Image 1 (cartoon, rainbow, N blue to C red):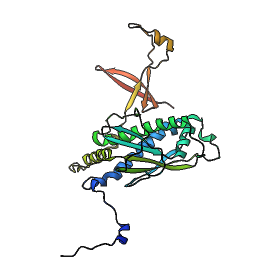
Image 2: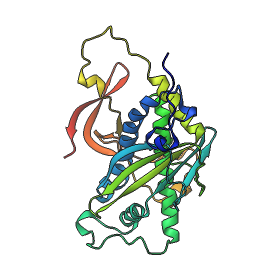
Image 3: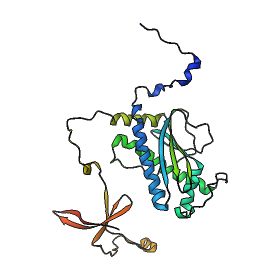
Image 4: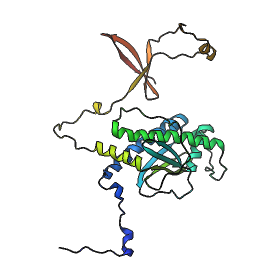
Length: 292
């Protein structure tokens, strides 16, 4: 029987330190979660900044760390719920870039040549915007973990009700998310901290979805059935003076004119016009036309 090799203290620097709390857990699935998280955050920045203000935010990579920059002076904003505490911290250069798009009226074609100045004093507007941005990001991240348990049809959390200026605990998982904005030539990191409760919630979801898939059906699945898209039909939209709304009473009738065509949206994007048809007591959308 071979003898165990004793390693001296000088040789332990290259060894991987195992976290006993993660032994026996589906940590090999964390890379898959990293891909989903990258897609979720890219959708968040694309929807709120790229498409709305012409920004060029891009999530470059997601990396998980056993230890993170908790000792550094970062402005952590955290959210506490029955699962545990989840926190995020965004590099100030990226925060000021997003703030410039949100309130500065900057479009990509009018970006100044000088770089973002991170030495300027922090303002109350920046603090409020940082809190608002954290509510949205943490809501998307929490929903990303929820989908591991309940599937893609589970309702998203949206912007969280309240976040706190509380640094995360030393026990937990740190995730570094690379983020850049080409127009301002800014690159930095978004840091995410999951405490033990949220880490257990994440790993439980990964383990639940990592069951072996049956191989009885070897035929390829048609692409059309792999890409479900939710369509929203908006048949009526009208502007009413605020005073008229205040004067409304039960039984009042607001005259409206229903259009022959309805607006068909995918998410927040108006992509098609369509006609509503009735058949066997059901309403159907037909005669789709591109908006452009």
